[in-house]
Every structure is written in C-alpha cells, then in structure tokens.
Image (cartoon, rainbow, N blue to C red; front, side):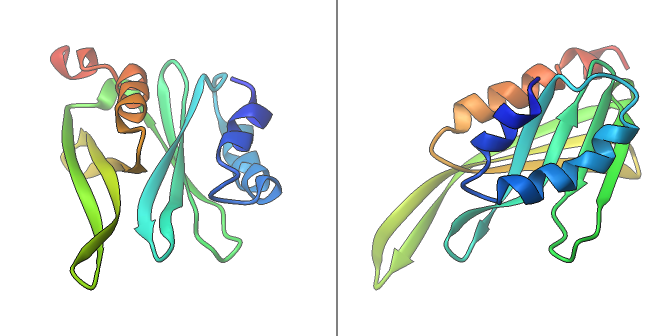
Length: 147
C-alpha cells in the first residue's frame, strides 16, 4: 500500500496533510506492513464525513479515529480474534420539503473481536459494493468460520 495514494483518495473528506499526520503514529506502532486503508464514513451536515480510518495488515486491524481536537486515538486488534461479522446494507435519503434531494447507499460492518470488543466500519456514498468488497477482503469470513 502506498500511503500518499490512499491519502489522496480521501482528500475530499479531510486535508491530506492532516490525515497523514493523524496516521503517522499508528503506522509507527504497526507491527507489520500495512496492506490496506479503508475509510469509515458517517452522514454529516453536508454529506458523508470521515469518522475513522481502518488500517489492515496480514494479521492486524487498527482503527485510527478522527477526533477533531488534535488527539491521536487508535487501537489494534488481531484478526484471528474475529468471532462475528454483521453486515447491514441500506439506503439513506435526504428529504427537503417532502422531496428527495439526495440519496446515499449505506453499509455498516460490525466486526466482533470478543464479546466485549467490536469495531464498526460505516459507509455512505454511491460505491458501496466496492467498499464492502474491500472490507470483506481484509476481514474474510474464513476468520469467523475457523473460531
């Protein structure tokens, strides 16, 4: 994975320099080479907004949260601890004066690592199938089936 390329893809949601700075510390601590970076999005006032970045390697998942107050908040988990994956697909319409003015495909992938710990990756946009495929490539269903 080339960091600059992945960060550039997310520049519509956050300044590239700020995003690179946010990711610098989790990447420094990462015990393996990062193979993928997937955004988690929420519905903001002006459309989809970035809430966190998930970093993936062969064995680990890291969530780097967007805090908005210059804090670096991130955590790591071992992919081998994944015991359940729940996928929720839907649609979100923006209605003004009883008219649909915008419509977004949605996805929420809830990854349970242990009964008391889970991660949620979310998507709002028009390329949901690509996003879901990327998530499920990084956290294959096989992780659940072998537990």
